[in-house]
Each structure stands twice: as structure tokens, then as C-alpha cells.
Image (cartoon, rainbow, N blue to C red; front, top):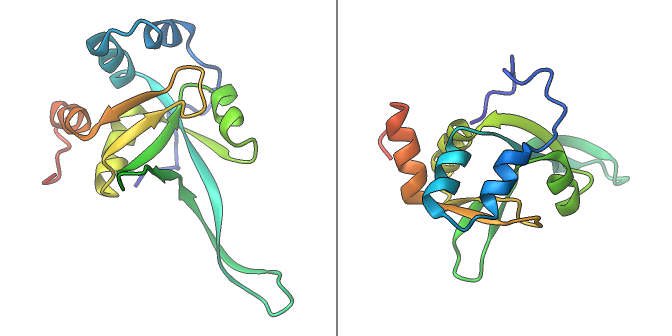
Length: 145
């Protein structure tokens, strides 16, 4: 679970880091993994309707992180380098900034197979479960994964 209270990114305007974006285009897997590991990313939070009134109006809902499932049944938690890449995917999604290692912990806790960064571009990157596990081990946050 990502803690939405007391964010270290309170003054973050959601802009992508140009240096990070440049590294994502490099094709260098090690450099990409290292740059992402130390980055602030945005997760998409969307409203999920739990129940509605008989007239169709909202009764109960909750906010949820977004993940996608590919054709092989693998689940990837979505993350974005900037508000522009999040809006390209879904203009209605709410951005929540978080450290990539915190996002990795959330993905693993939810049983995700990967974190998918910038799913709609400009440069989609998939961070596989093994890398997420390494990131969490480095921070001492393995929690039995």
C-alpha cells in the first residue's frame, strides 16, 4: 500500500525529469533500472464504484491503484515519469507521486509481476518482478516476497 499521507513530494508539479526520460531512450537496461530505482514516479489512482443507489447514483466507492493484465495473464502496476505520460494514458486518472522503491513494494504486495512505466509512452519500460525484489532487498523492505 502506498502511503498517501505526508508525501515527500508535496510541492511536486508532476513534470517528468528530462534526464530520466533521456536514459529511458538509451536502451541500456542497467542504466534504466538504476535511474528508475532512484526516481520519483507517479502512480495512477482512479475511483472504483463499490455500490450504487437504485437511481444509479454513487453510494460507495474507493480509490485504487491501476494495473493491467497482459495476454499471458501477467499483472503490471502502472507508473508514470510525468503528468504528461499519465494524461496520455488516462486524462481522468489522479497522479500520486511516490518513490520508485515504494511503488515496487506496493506492486509486490499486490502480487504484480512487474511495474509498467509510461504504458502509453513516450518510452514504455517494464520493470520485472526480479528487479522489484532487488530494489526492495536494497532498502530492507522484502517483507517475505
